[in-house]
Structures are given as structure tokens and as C-alpha cells.
Image (tube, rainbow over all chains, first blue to last red; front, side, top):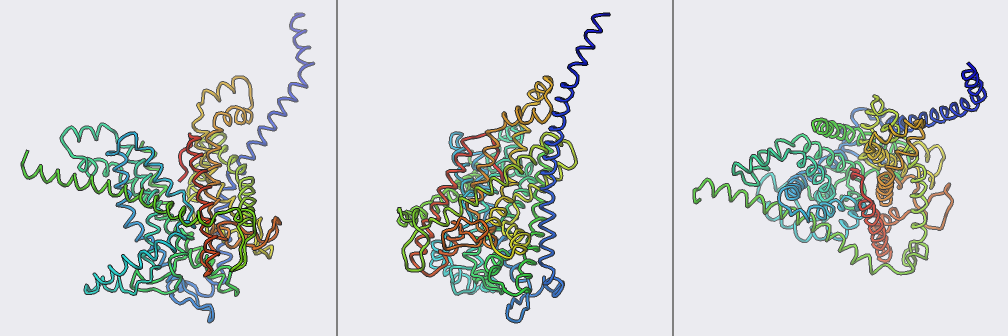
Length: 328
Length: 281
């Protein structure tokens, strides 16, 4: 009896301070919880903010030109006639060139790193390839303009022009003169830039292939290439496509490297050796110089189109990669 | 073993293997060529002047002091703004809301922002800061860069916190610690190397970014530490100087390019050796 009374009186005297401390802790916990939640929602808000502000900025152009904006090739600041077709065309063509070159090379490098390379060299070579992704895009730009473009002008481009001049379709595709800069050069630079993405994602998904499957195939006497072609690639194709889409998203949005070497001509040419422009290059080149509302608003509209395209491409890429992750 | 089927298979395999070797050589070769050119062209332009003098007018002599300082100021501000937000958001995703719907949306959107075109970020900040304020400013540049820092930090923070073993959390909870204390004193402690890697990767990423600065911080030929005024930055100056017809400017552009690349490579190699973190793609 006395024991209980003593205990309760002790609890009563300690109670205010203890509950005060607990309340304080609970309060701080709630505040921290709220802060993290706000920050997480802030990420979602950023995306919303980007879309809303771009639509807002692009509205004058979009309401004036309507859907024709997407299908008009003219880009004339003097008469204020703007259309996005030439930059969209340039963006898509340079990205396609980049992927056509980088996908096979990237996959082969990944095959080398997972199947052929001696263990000791795997990490250093992997890191070296990934360093290509770490080099800032402006460096690719300055290198492309001063080193790569003159080199192409003297070697590859004259060769392409002369060797395809008598073949009907290809002669238009590779019509001269060799400027050095142009759509092909931009595509090649982009290929180098996305190569590390394709390599490192393909390598990661190649490594998810269960060794048992590969060993079984090797045990049957399959060659390295046959294991690659019939076991590894079919097993990991979803992830590889995801990696390619991710690289496509990068290639579509790449700005500085392309701005240096594309030539900034708002026209659509049948030849990939001719100068052109991309969405991001147009914005980078013209935005600070665009004085009238319609010009700058058209550039923001271009930005909106670019954001929507890359959003869709990257969303598909993430869905595919999430699917692979879940399968694991 | 001279049957034709076997020989054919063998030949195809040899071709594929040599193609893989060639592809790897191409990849490594590009890296070597680019770094080689950079060293070759940049090194001759580097001297003490580059680090001690302002950007010159065409034909004059000078260095890159003001853009270097501008880059340092805006990069540090971007990290100061972006890191806490990124860490908090990553904490929510890994700790408080690990299984909530919001987390999966945020993760998805964050992964997209991670690869979103940086020029669009520039346009966004132009619309929300530069246009309402009426002038370009260092603040706008820092905010644009911080928007690139956030997704990188969110991603690595979440990844690193998810690696912390649950037993550690449970042990701390068993001692009666509130969750906020557990996160800060147990989880952050365990994950700090990886989280630091994330910040370093983010710094490496933004120190070469040009596109988001073009129409936020713009450029400034003169010395300034005023964040309300246009501010020069190394990448933008390289862009301007490289495309100019003046040879001294081009030489400075190469020197600047070498400085940035060395800084970025040093950062990313440090981040890798610090270890832990998966690369943020």
C-alpha cells in the first residue's frame, strides 16, 4: 500500500517534466516529418512549376500560331513568323544519328566488359568509359568545333560526298559541300556523349542474367557470341531498351555541345552534312537576343515542346527500367 | 573439328569478339583524344595571369579570375540551397514515407528531372525569377543550378538510407528515441559517406553546366560579387570566348576548359573512391 502510494507520488512529481520532454520530442519529430514531406512534395511541385511557367511563357506564340507552330518551317524574327518544324527535325535527326552509332558500340563495350574482359581490368575500363559521361558538355562543344569538325571536313565528309554521289537517295543525304559543322557532326558528338549511358546501363542489366543460364549455354558448347545473342540479349532486352530510351532523352535535350557544331541554320535540308539547328541550340543562341515578345515566346514554346518530348521518352525509359528492377 | 558448321560459328564468334574489342578501343580512344587535346591546347594557355586577372577585352591580356569566382559563388550557393532540400526529400522517401504512394510518384518524377534538359531549367528560372525581377542575376543562376543539384542529392540520399540495416533503426527505437532522432543520429551517421558522394557528384555535374546559366546569370565582364547583378561564370565565358574570332579569347577558352574538366574529373574520381554510392545517371 505504502509502496504503491510512494510510487504514484513519485510519478506525479516526475510527470510534468517527463511529459514535457516527450511532448517536445514529439513536436520536433512532427516538425522534421513535415519538413521532409514538404521537400518531397517540392520535387513534384518543381515539375508542375516548370510545365506551368513554360505554358505561360509560350502562350503568346501558341495562341497566335496554334497547331501550325509544330508544322511550319519558317523562322523569321523580322516578319514575326515562327514555326518549330526545323528545330524539331534537327533535334530528332541528330538524336537518331547518335543512337544508330552509339547503341551498337555501347552494347559491344558492355559485352566486352561482362563476358570477355579480364576481371582486373573490368573496373578501370568501366570507370574510364563512365568518365566520358562526366566531361561537361561545353568541353565536347569546344572540342567538336576546333578539333572534330575540321577533321571531318577534311576526311570523312569529302569521302562520303564523293563515294555516294552516284547513288540516288544517298547522294541527297550526303550532298556537299563539306562544311565541317552540321547535323552529322552534331550527331557524332552526341553519339560519344550518350555512349557511356548505354554502356553502363547495358552492363548493369547484362549482369542480372542468372549465371546458370549462361553456364548452361556454354556447357552445351555455345560460343561467347551465341551466348550473348541467344541468352543474354533476349533475357535483358527490356532493360537495354530502357537504357537506350534514357540515352535518347539525353541526346534530345543536349544543348551546349550541339550549339557549337550544328551551324544554327533554321532550315530543313535533305543532306545531313548541311548546317541545321535543334530546339536546345535555337534557345541557347537566340533567347538572350530575342527582343520582341513573339520571338522569345516562340523560343519558350520550343522549350515546352522539348520538355514534353523528353518527358515522354524518359518516362518510358523509367517504366522499362522499373520493370527490370521489379523482376529482379 | 573441320566441319563447316563449326567453322562458321567459330568465325562469327571471332568477328563478334574483335568487334567488341574495337568498340572498347573506340570508347577509350575518344576519352584519350579529348583529354589529350584539352591538355595540349589548354596547358599552353595556363599561367598565373589566368587566376589573377580579369577577363580581357578583345586583343588585350587578362585572365579568368572573375568568371572563376562567379562560378565558385554560384556553385556553392546552389549546393547550399539544393543539398538540404534534396536530403530532406530523400529522407522522406526512405524513412517516413517509404511505402507511401507519394514516394513512388516523387521517385519517378525525380528520376525524370535527373535527366531533364538543363536548358529547360534555365527557361523556367528565367520565367519565375529573371522576368519578374526585370534583370539577370547571380541569384537566378544559383537557383537554376540548385534545381539540378536537388534530383542528384534526392536520389543518392534515398539509395543510401535504404541501405542502412533496419536492425540499427530498431535498436535505436528500442532505446526510446523518437524517429527524427533515429534518422539524424543513426541513419545519417551510417549513410553519410554515400550522401557526401551524392553532393560531390552534384557539384561535378553543375560546375560544367552552361545552358541553365545563359539566361539566368548571363555574363559579366567585370569583377562582381553582387548577386543581384549579372554574374560571369567559367562555362559561359568559355562559350562566349570560344565562339569569338579573337585568338587570345580562344586561348583563354581552352585554358578555362582544361580547368573545368580537371576540376570535374577530380570531383567525380573522389566521389567514386569515397565509394558506396551508385552512380547517379
